[in-house]
Amino acid sequence: MRAVIQRVQSASVVIRSVEKASIGKGLLVLVGIEDSDGPEDAAWLSGKIARLRIFSDENGLMNLSVTEVHGEVLVVSQFTLHASTRKGNRPSFIKAAKPETAIPLYTAFLERLSAALEKPVHSGEFGADMQVGLVNDGPVTLYMDSKSKE
Image (cartoon, rainbow, N blue to C red; front, top):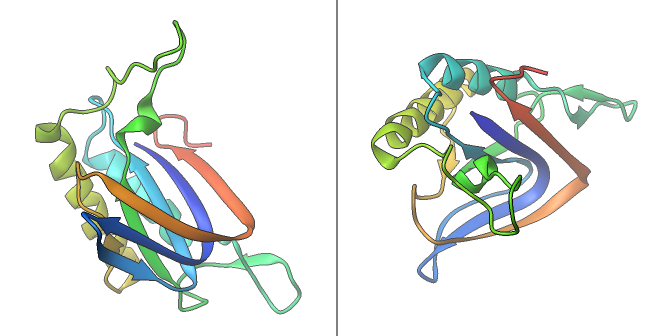
C-alpha cells in the first residue's frame, strides 16, 4: 500500500457536484492499493499514519500526532499512486489492484485507521471520479509505502 499524507488546514472531496466529506485541521491521506497488498499492509500503514508526529508543538517542532492536536482525517483512494512511468509517456496502472481485491483492503484500512485514532475517519468513494480540495499546511507532504517501510 502506498500513501501520500498531507498535513492540512482543511480538505474536502466532492463527487458528482456534491460534497461527500470535509475536514478542518488534520490529515488528507491519498491511498493506493496494489495486487500484492494484504491485511498486514493495511495494519502497518494505518498504525504508522495514526502515530505520525508531524504537527508542531509549543516550540514549533514537529512532535505531535493528529490525535494529540484533535485533528481529523480524510482518506481518498487513488490507484494512480501505483502508476509505472518506466516506458513511454502514458502511465501504466497494471500493478494497481482490481476492485475485488482493493475494496476489502481499502475498507480494512479505514476501519484500522479509525480504531487507531479512536474516532471516525472521513473518506471519499472508492472508484468514483472525485474532486479533492485542500489547503496544505506547511506545506508538509509525506510518502509512505508498506513494501519499503522507510
